[in-house]
Length: 144
Length: 99
Image (tube, rainbow over all chains, first blue to last red; front, side, top):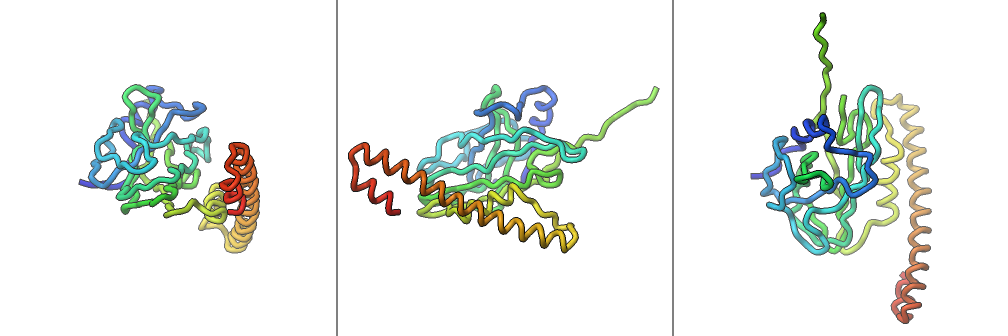
């Protein structure tokens, strides 16, 4: 099995209506974990899993905390963004995608599935996730 | 009585990028490039004369950011140099200062 595109998880949409996720909290809310291409994530993925999560030097299970940017409006679209995240001084390989999940919520519920499109690696270097432009057309989380 | 419903949509049409290095960190220039793209986004559909001006401005901002990043790195090295020197590792401190 393999990564098969980017997905905003359906459970996340439901949880938004239940008030499970808070993108304005100061810190330690959302994490990004990295996976190899054996992971089988879709829009139906509901929670973080350690299955097929990558391992390597200076990479910790469950990945890194993200810095979320306070949601804003652009026209009639609401959007949320994260600051680019750097996994520093890591040696990791065959990284095909990621899960963003809410570690502060019970059960580590997922936000979205990220497909890198190809295997990525860093050797004793930095591995940076670059989030898309935070506008109404490109932001990672948009409600139109 | 009218039935009212509101169309709300959330899209899977998003994409993150991945940038990596081997045996080094990112240079100030590489980081400045990412930084400026967060600050200034130039629409592909902007009128050519406005787009060109915006792109030129973005290039200048990128250079300024890179310069100040280099200064910040150098300044941090001074801090690291003193911390290591104070720990009694003068040779290592000198090595870091000369990097």
